Image (cartoon, rainbow, N blue to C red; front, side, top):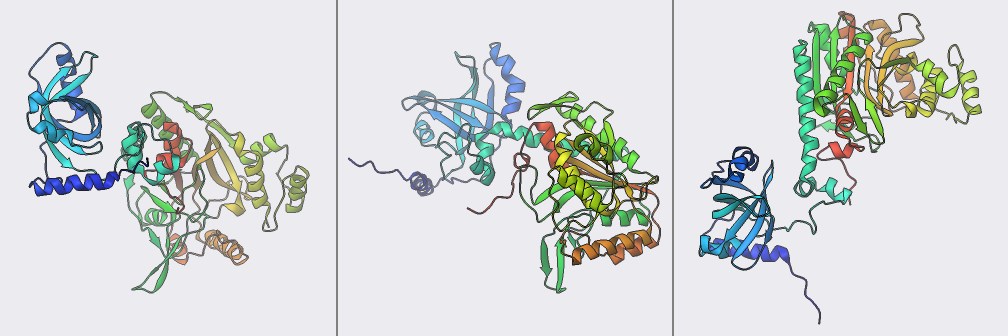
Length: 490
């Protein structure tokens, strides 16, 4: 005999129709939730366990389970902060018990009743009254407890949050991390600002932008790839300490550590340099580790990351020498290319400068070895068009990247404030762009003009918030710290 598949959606829709015919609104506008579940436990658990009687509470949440079909039924309701057992009896609720039993798992319900402790020691509400607050038409996924399908979790984060409430802790911590960063910077007299998301020139980083069009102005606009150039204009204008925490957009690949849009902290401080930015970065992130995890030593992936200051500071040249046995100092393009290819590092045709080869060598031989917090300092001039030339070596710039567990976490410069030097750097970038590098920097004449009015010595810093959250919550994919990561269409 063929078993017909039950249309659960239609069954629930029929219940809605039945409610409406009875004059019952299955989606009321308001319910007086006098106390949430976390507060119930904090306020009454000990007293009720000690024998206190007569405690009546009124709370609300999503019905997550319902067991029993006769004259009594156990269930669980869950709100944003916790879960509690509910117990309904026909002899207590009279004719409303049958209505209660028509509730489905997933419905939102308000309940009022006496608290008691079951024989198994569980705090429970003996339901005296209930109100349907929102009828769920779609049933929760089968075996919703511990939903494991990664793709479903990312595509339908709301189901993930319902089914795996423990992941809310990641996003609570994310919120706390951002709040703590703001507090630390404000305590240091930094001012938070907001700058445009739509730019007429894609600047401030080496990246491929998303492009849009403004109809009224009939002009091409770019979603920002960085916050840098507008923030530095504010330093020119006289603000001495500014920061912004905002979304940036890069039209690049997706991986466990890349998402097309992500959250970036950028800050700029007048009369500071990249050494000051190292000190500040170390202070911010080590403080976050201690505050969020309770310790400077944090388990991540298969490693233990030690955030205890001070952290290792090493030049890019010394790290390349250590991990590849190639001494890059003073090497011409051809000499460096020959040594790299002798070690199996293929150099593609688009590489035209020694600085590009140095970056490639670093990517191939160094970064995967950097597990503990490491400041990689003193980058090639050709690959850092917005950083000041190194005070001891004009072939380098005063720049660092912070690498932890092989991931770039922060990037910082002693900011270039020589307008003529900046213009020449942009011109070099434009030449690279015309040669086919669509990630090279565009010319920004307005920014050059701003620098011509004078910008004091300045230290600048960018920190990838998502990756910091990954490290401090033990998540090995950026998608697990983004509520709504980007996904390919099905």
